[in-house]
Image (cartoon, rainbow, N blue to C red; front, side, top):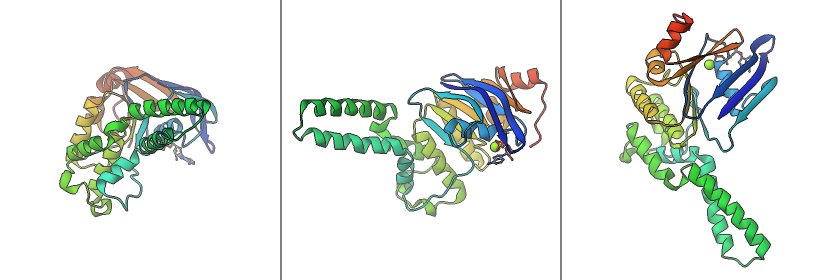
Length: 257
Ligand SMILES: Nc1ncnc2c1ncn2[C@@H]1O[C@H](COP(=O)(O)OP(=O)(O)O)[C@@H](O)[C@H]1O
Ligand SMILES: [Mg+2]
């Protein structure tokens, strides 16, 4: 599903990865561990394309929807909680608009070639819209928000009226509503209160897609992952099995945080 091969990456003089390879299979739940500054967040930024490798290849299966959750929630304002969550599924919303426009265009007279081309674009758009869960986007956003403790009476409340901890829940709702094939979670529990942590944990246990989790939270790692990638001094090692298997096999106690 996601394939990184022979990745080399430096930041200035610092070598982060030397011929590092990593294969993420569909439905797998990987933990990504290593000391601070090892390059865990960089791996995510390479996968999302925010950063480019110096050399090597990154292959992502076609149409893979990636949800990326980091501690940096970014700015939120000018929308209601529900609108904020729906708007985060930007491509889905845009596809929905395009589908409507194409349906309108189909009512106008046009020649056969133009119609055939339009029908093909329409079919592709519909297929992707469905893959992204476009048909129930709004109801899914509502269900996710409610599950995170933001009920119907608060859907229309402006996002800026929520406190920091509740904004994190809205940020989580954005990602979960996206219906991603792959969830990249970068230290997701750092700014979550205990209740939100439990809600996230339950959501992840229900999530059937692929997960890559960077976390220092052992409770989380134990509950979620079934393999561990360790980054250490530019090298990447993979340990099959859960987090306790990894600790036993690697002989690690803890990373300096
Ligand atoms: N844009 C950048 N320019 C220079 N160095 C960077 C940049 N981003 C990250 N680094 C450095 O790269 C290293 C890896 O960063 P990061 O991937 O964030 O590590 P981790 O998430 O494992 O803590 C760190 O030493 C960091 O200082
Ligand atoms: Mg990091």
